[in-house]
Image 1 (spheres, rainbow, N blue to C red):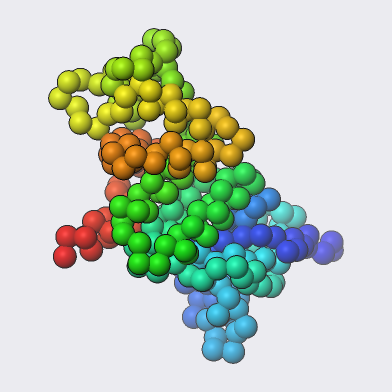
Image 2 (cartoon, rainbow, N blue to C red):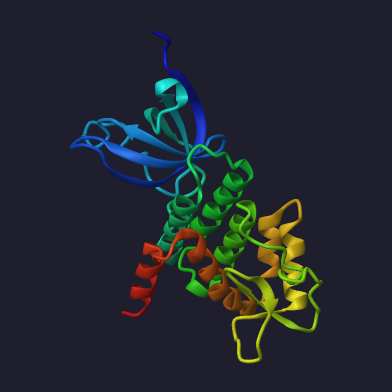
Amino acid sequence: MASAKRVADEPAYILHQYDWSESSLILEVFTRHRGRVALAAKGVKRHTSNFRPVLLPLQPLKLNYTLGAEGNAEIHTLKGAEWVGGHVMPQGDALWSGMYLNELLMRLLARDDPYAALFDIYAGVVRVLAGQHGASTDAIEPVLRAFELVLLRELGHLPALDQESTTLSDVAAAARYTLVAEGGLRQAAPHERAALGGRQWQAIELALQSAQPFPQTLQALAEPEVAQALKPQLRNLLQYHCGSTMLRTRQLMMDLQSL
């Protein structure tokens, strides 16, 4: 019988985990070269397991695992895990923001579909969040909006933002436009508050097309009102692609803010 294929030193982040047995967990991980992967972490819940202090979310890891069933199995077997280091765990609002990004990736990424560029951007965002000690939600908002835009564009869910989606005509710099889930970018009605000017949409589109889309998009959202206007528009678009149920982390963050 042929031995199972082994994946070694794979850069990864843990997105989610759930119980598999009294002593084991199933880990949903985002890897750089293989995308979202499910791993069985056998015996990890035992107090003697060396994995216990390592398998944490929002921490850069290198994983070793074997591919079951000639690589076609849904769940593979974790063999080793090493913390890469570089930053501490995000705290406070930054922690909840990181968990929100993890849920987005869980909902939107198909298994075994690699997104190396998106992985690198996610890793950079996690580093940014880890450095936001005591930062307010307002300070984190542009980071979340920039990642949402890059994620949607990477997955093919974001239309061109420098033209109207139905007519394919270029946006007018002085006009206002809004992004809707089923219709793309359209001219905003006078009463619609969740809208941006054509010049702002053009700047975002240019940033998304750059060689460094995340920092350039973050720069395009530097004005607080831009990130605030984008928030409801991107929320509706993400809900549309994730399904009708509100994201658990978003609901929890809303509940905490209302206390």
